[in-house]
Image (cartoon, rainbow, N blue to C red; front, top):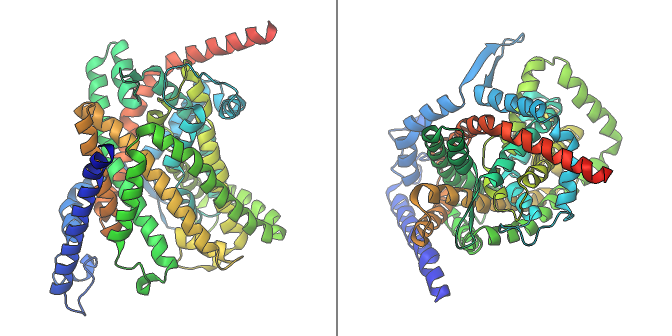
Length: 533
């Protein structure tokens, strides 16, 4: 019965989706002459481009996507000494400013609290009888799987290409500040979580916005912000957390299998179908199933990527001192072509805030499921997330790019291509390893964001079996769409939705942070008494 329900719930819709794509592909091929312009070359020859599913969606959603993106990523712009246009998105200012504020408010918890986070991650603080669904380590790996991804590979390369090697210094600084924000929001996620009668746990910004602000006497504002956050999270889950991941995983395999003339070219629907079917087997079991997968896949993909990066660094060990000196000096010394100190700083901070998502409000949804009676324990272990995601993994990526020198002699390359070229300087088959890492990064991000989206979905539409089935089926269909169609405008819209989550989230975190400070002070007093006793 369970197997038939699983089949009807997930795989029948996927097969229907497959049929639609085959029909669309066959129709498009039959109506398109051999010398036709690519349907994605809209700007060059829009009138001559044949109709296609993804082109129609892109053109339909473009005005809305552009308007939302312009609002969320609104930038203050100026010209630097080199005459280049520079800009800083206000959302980045908000996120980095929050990190500074919470670092001061919580008296540097992002520094002295790290050791406590390590102890908790190693299992030295176990509460087997506490309410919740997953362990602290599982929550950490689940949250990491949602942030450790293509940004650590492509995003760092982009930051160095545009901002110069010194961007790494500012990435690390921003990550340390982001730890304090992450601590506050993840602690709130456990403090205001909701325990269902069936043992399931729901938590995250939706709940500390609605419950926490109601306690402060602002129930209407709290409910409005909670719904706004949930809607943005759903949009982010379908696009940047799902479609973008399946698309990039597919593209990475297209490259290593021969590119446009390779085996996988034109079979995005088949790759997406495989990825959706595999993800469906994981997300059907909820957070417990997701956590069991992420606690295995995150260490594997992290070690695989870090070992590969360290090998590249070791092969160029003679150039390491010079590379480190270049990174440090260029962080504080104006360089032509990189926008000077401000330009380098902006790119480093922007990449860090986009990488670890501190202040976005996504991670508290995962940490809310921790088995614990002490909300602060979620905050302490969450400190490790920016450390591992940005300070360690992103630093290895940056060192590989700088030490190999590819950022200076690979004109036109950026993102994954630049990182891949850096890996290939040592061993020509290393890009294959990188593609495997990209697939693991994408898959783990996808399954974690399915949980974030589901919790936001059930917050709005109610928690029921049918409500969850509807979301999961839609989510898996979007996985296939992401790999098979070039829905760039949808993904851009979704990316904006993720960062729009920061606005309602940070309003709630600011207003509720006083309680976290009191809880932390009491915790430290109790710890001191234990030591003296």
